[in-house]
Image (cartoon, rainbow, N blue to C red):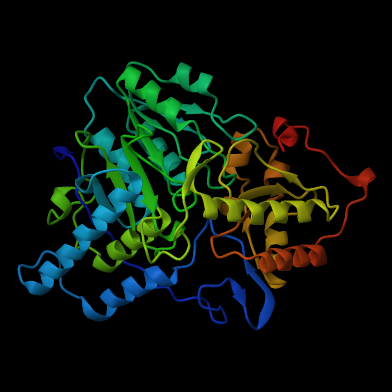
Length: 443
């Protein structure tokens, strides 16, 4: 076993630029050749903003030195990476030396579980994981279970959030790691991170928070929320695909996942992706409202929205767009119901369309000019999130996710509703089926 190294440093992995699919306008989600071409899948991936693209382009065109090289070009790359590391740290309320760049959210989540378990003392071999976590967390926990760790699996309540009483009962004196995502990527429901943090502290366990979906939508402050490890994903918050970061609180022991030449303090080997790091730093600075050039967050005050710190303008706009969409869908008379209830991300809607196969409906909407997400797993399996919440397989296979972004406009919401009205047929009241599951009652 590789000896664990205390505290972190940073690295990343490269991928795409800010290029949009052919026909898409710069910084906008409507195809000018087709006015109804609307993108409402921002939780899956968000467009690279012009602000981030400008910084990224400067490094694509003018900086190609290896950060590990001891010459001026290498020094320039190193300086850019360290500046980006500080921007990420400032955005999440941490210190720069606690941030390590990765290739994205999946690597960060894998590293959190395998890294902590690889440095674990022999008396701590127990993990607590919610069944609605991202699959990169679930699959990692399942692998650790195969390697001899014990995992307590928790189902969320029908409203989509973990029950704090279940957490209280699950965390033990031998618990190593508690995994609680910041917000669910399918339903947007916020999770009891602060409660999990207090509980982990009391029992001597660590808390890992996957903030991949929350980043860029609400303020994620690792320090004040009591996290020990926190992951972010670049393409969820207007940076390119292929870059992410793992924040590890100073003093937390974590073993490397990627081995090699010892970059980033020996924690994550591999030639640093300067361009990706710069883009992630710019995106996180903008979302946190600290960038004078950040068009989305410029001049917006911080406020509390349903108990979560957010940029007031961004949250209110996203919430207004989302609620306008939901109101319009209800008016279609197709028997749609929301999945999940309670405090959530201001941009996310998970909706059950009775009698509509999600993949088929997604395809028909796509053909008509609207991009949304079908909440299905590999091989058309029902959403593991909705099933964990108590939904029937039928309901889970008939649900779509709509997620608006910071660039979504009122005309786009109306265009989306126009597409839905063309594709869906109203369901007579007498013919509407109702899901008998507990989740069927959550609105």
